[in-house]
Image 1 (cartoon, rainbow, N blue to C red):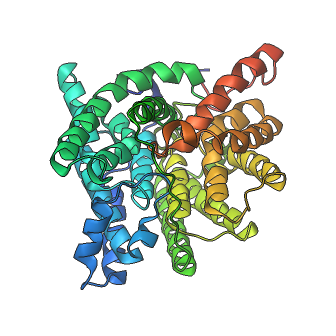
Image 2: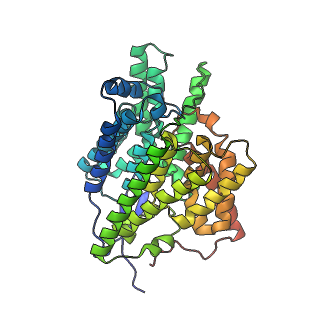
Image 3: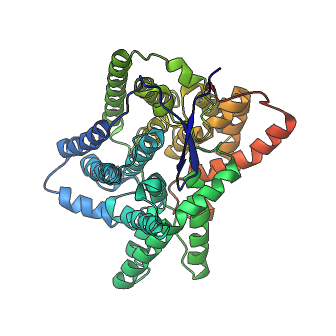
Length: 442
């Protein structure tokens, strides 16, 4: 069988090996990503009360924003969507200006940034981290495009900036200077650390930068506590926008389906089943390897799957839960699909039956939805192992938050890294999954 030649692209996340794209798979351009950002922004304008919009946007920016701070509960749905839309447009624009290739990792990063734009991220607290990664690229004499995706994922530590500036523990001037300096410093060290820690999880934790961020935030939180600064736990979620958010997500899924079917028809590429055969292990780029049409349909399917899980558990849609769903939609271009995600949802559900957290609470729903970070474990080693991984994920994710004090927004990526690091060596030693592959012909 003829081998597909590979390209080696240097990245701050890892050295990426991508198969050359078949000629009939057209590239996904920035237009849909800009459209997604504008959609969020104009939906926010539609729901906003203009008499309070400015003050609410300022309230979002000046919030310390540790986990879990739902901007909808803090302000309103309109202001939150405007803030989220502005943040999304900003990161799409800098990706466009940096000439980052539109690929699965970039789509995952942009959707994750927009998802957490509902509860923790905003333009102000993300900017120092992005600047730090840009300075790292300058120091290494590399184009920013080589580390841009890591920079977007690395904004998971945005609450560190907000906490230093707006918590009230420090005078405003000192807090501002320290917050900006620390944010830039963290952004500077994320790329090399992310590359190192990927070998720790062997590509089986999709939120690899979340694990990296967890390690950094654990040190930062330890320093805070060393100086007597205890970070108060936060749990602020909304409960009055469930139906509106449901309809918005269904509308997004329909848009993804329509766009996907259009590309499948125009490119004569209907091979969605090929995506389902992939393990999802990093680096699995569905856009480059399988085409934009099947990828967009997979993203729509995952959106509906997550909505179905929320409804089956009688959960309520709010900022954090919708943010989790948007993140999974993005990673459905970069590793997630129904077959490697359902076993994890089942495992978390079974753990929830013996857990004291009500299944309809936001913390449980976020843990379940974000457990799909371990999709490669289920995809590579099989569904039964996936159920076990989901079960263990809930057990761990409910306990690791104290280590970083809520300063790492990707708490589940932090937990998923430990689960992958614990399970994979044991499974390999026992020969479980031996002979499996990622479903891509070579």
